Each structure stands twice: as C-alpha cells, then as structure tokens.
Image (cartoon, rainbow, N blue to C red):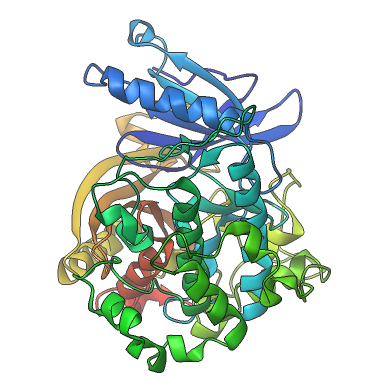
Length: 477
C-alpha cells in the first residue's frame, strides 16, 4: 500500500503523528509549494460517530481564513474498499507550520521574555477574535495547538473539539453543553453539569496560555477543589509564590482578568485589546526574523539545550553559514535561526523538533541506554519495527541482499508514553539513526511528541539525555 497524491501534493516526509493519525510534509512539485498532510487512519473499527466528528472539523476549519489560523487547503477520503492500492484514511492538506510548536521553544519553569509573550499573545488574540466573529468556539486552546509558520507567525490549529455557537446571519447564539478540553486549560464552569457560554471558555484558555508562556508551566492541574494551587489562587496566597511573584503588574492583571472564575465577569477578548499591557507597541515586531528566533529561544540557550540540538561539528561553508542544498519554502531565516534543520548521514534535513541530540556511539549501543533511562523515569516504551534505509553512498539501482546488507543503514524506533507532573498523558516516538563522527560511528536521536504538552516533552528529553547511561555519550558544544 502507498499514500495517494492529494490535490497535487506528494507525501514525502513524516513529521509527526500518533496512534490514529500521521502528519507528513507534502510537496507539490509542479507548483513548487509545500504543505502538511494529516492522515486520519480508517479501519474496520472506525465508527460512524468518529467519521462524523472529523467531517464537522473539516466543515468548520474550511471556512476559517485568517493569518493567525492554520489554513485548511483540501481533503479527500480513501475508503477501505481501496485498501489494496492506498492507505485508507481521511487526508487533510493544511498549511505547513514550518516553525513547529511555539512551546517547543520555551524552557520549562522559565518561560519567555515579556516582549515575546506580548508579541504572540496579541497574535493569539487577533486569531481568536476572528474565530469568534465567525461564530466558532475553539474549546481546546492549549500549547500543542499553537504553531509557527516559516516567518514566525502564530497559527491556531486543531479544530477537532470546536463548535458553532452563533449564526452569523442572525447573530443568534446558543449555550454549549459538551464537556471537553484538557484539564489544566479548561474553565471552572465545565466542572458543573450545566450549559455554558462559549466565548468565556476560550478567554479562560487564553489566560492559562499567557501564564504558561511567561512562567514555563501551567498554573494548576485543574481548576477545581482537587488542586491545591487553584485553591491558593482563589484565596490569594499564591501571588506571594514563584512564579506568580515574578510576573509584572501589566500581564498579571490581564491574566487575573482572564482567569476570573465567574464567566460573566471574566475579561472578554474585545477587552483584551484595550488593556494597557496589550495597547503598548510591540518591541520585537519590526526587528526581523533572526532577532525574533533568537529572543524566542533565549531561555533554551541559557539552559544549554541548544548545545545538544546542534553541536559544533555541524558542517559550515566558507562563509560560515550552514550547508544547505536548496532553499525550499519552509527553509527561511526564521527556521534556520531556530535550528530546525539537522545534519544527518544523508545530508541536511528538515527536523521541526528541537528535542534531539547526537551521541558518540551507534544506535545499536545507544538504544539500550535509552530504554534504561525510560525505565528509571517510569515511562512506558515498546520497540517499533526497525527501518532499513539505503546508505547515502549506495547505488540506488543495486538490490539489497543478505550478501550486501552493509549497503543499508538501520534506524531503531521506540514508541513511548506516560503522564507528566500535571497528570496529562504524553505519547511520542524516539528514533535513532547512524551518524559518523570523527571517523567513528555515532548516532542521531530525535524525540518526536504527538500527544501532550511540548514543555513536558522537553522535560522528558532533558531527563533522558542527562541520565547516567546516556549523558557520557552525548555530544554538545
């Protein structure tokens, strides 16, 4: 089975995905354009309810056109009756968010500068004001649904839980009743079995996101009596504690307005734009893509994380620039400054994940150390099928047999999962491939998250490479 061409796009590189879907980088060769293609797999176990839910997501996402909303381009369905020829699934072609996850660039428990938080929060506010004007409530605002394009512009994504609450023609609104969303980001009124107003739900989520940008962590596990932190927020005690006492007066007053428990008194999205902190001009908007990328990743640089993502052995040309074979659309000053291209055995490759590292021993030796690290961290793992790739110097027309297996390289893969300290599930992949370093066999390891908080995934990545069995072999600047 293979993947079909979708609206002229060929699926060329897997860049994400989980148990039920896979995300590819897709290329339209004739038009010289790139996109993302999300494939939601269809099997004999797929229910009509699941199909209807995806259909609703597509209908809603298709009509949303705004610079801060990930653009929906096209969709096709490959039914099971064609499974002998193509992989069955719902294929959704989307704008490629080449800058990756916004929150993949944020150091845990540190956050970003106030200028960066202001820059991206205003883009989030602009996008959400538009979405609400179209009568749509997102209902699942959280870090993993905020992406960046090749220029560093914020893109709101994933409308799987969204709902229409207002008719544009008449302006008539309705309350919603479905309980959904991730606990650290949901509004407290969802704790009760009553219909709720749509717009205040998203305003609350925006408040949690602003806090998380500035603090590097969510404020609580959930907004209920079960959370000691939320109870201290209600009593006011928490404002004397870190990280709340680090926040300056401007953003803190906005966060408290958005995190007002009574939805009728909560700051609205229209009120965001007249808040004093939001009315100030952006200090970074006109400084260019490189300055934006450098300030966005400043906390990672100070934490030393970027030293692992791109050690000093990466090849440079005579001008000191990274060696690049071409300049596709997703390769911009912004994405290059974010180090979203990795040196691999087969050349420079787009890798939209900063949770990666190189080692001085080959994958066959490193895989055991990584498994031991996951065991020590109480993270579940299982082996995924090993992938054999032709070596870069091998003749592409030569058939691989038992007698010439040295013409191929082996990639080891692990499926991992667990729960972070906010009790939110995470899932992802660990992939190890050979990499020659100073004439000895090394390893290039990429940890790709597909479920969960990007900040929590970064904490896991750091814990793995700092583990006693892994750290002695990790290369860094």
